[in-house]
Length: 404
Image 1 (cartoon, rainbow, N blue to C red):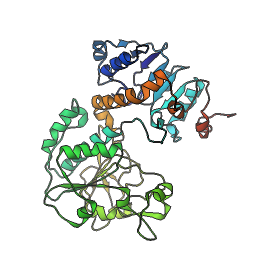
Image 2: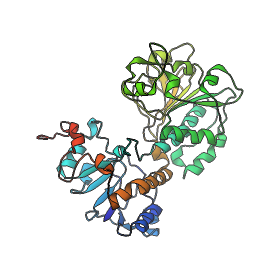
Image 3: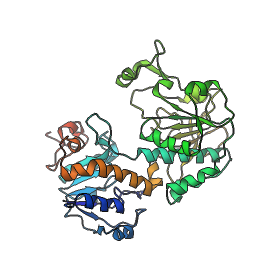
Image 4: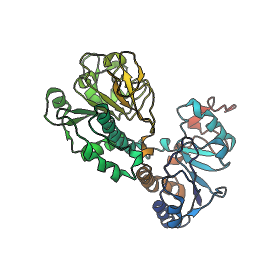
């Protein structure tokens, strides 16, 4: 079997890779019958020379590969027919901007396996960059807070060589004694966010104490769904009921908004769930949050101040609660917003190594040795016969398919 690592072609460019040079050598040592070849690139943070030094073949031509691994969507004109591809396609939710990509995969008889759809038999996602979204997003949260209040300056994460250098700058963070920080999300993003909070040695307190007390030092609380959602009829909360149908629930997040200075949003929000806070809520006389770091970045949705994504080059903007619109960062009366939607790209070396480790542990063996549990099949939107897999038949109209 011959596996290729493709050059990232999407614009703006992504500096991440599916496998680092060291991980490529690990794959070839663990699976002697697998050959690995890397397409040269002047975009990656990891250079071609580093792959060559590790003994990994560099080759522009990947036509003789069986399986191709990338990160972001592959430009249509770069797709090679009759191959199996792994990448984040952003198609299974019928994203309008990628309909032509899915159609091209069908026309070129490509088996498209989307990383987001790789799940264990119980339904839990196997692979993703969520942890580093949480790590970088929370670093950016403190960077934004420092600039919003002219308190301290942190460099951009992407200008740091790696995570170690980035975290070295956290010693510059100087928070007022009464600063309160609220974090939502208990998945990969939330756990990544906690790594930065713990690196800063900020004390964690229980949500009830967070609302009732002042502590004389910066503190944070990590909120569960039950902490900011309640059943309208009796104020109760049942997780199974909420996950199945949250229509009878309402948000109680405003209690925390009146006690919080910095909000780090790392939660997963399901369509139909209550908004955490609305535009009307932000105009509440007791609203206290001055900075929202929205790592989840659901646009114009559950976090009312997130009107649009921001970028690595321009990561911060202001939200004017009266005019309900984006304004210049630090505009009088505005809330500072950080809503970068490709956060792991800011630490490409570390994020790639983390991603590749999971790939080697859980996905490469299925590719090389067989997929007895059907994990790869379950994530295959298309087949090598140029058809949609039955589970993705709902994409027929979206991809312009007839007769399926």
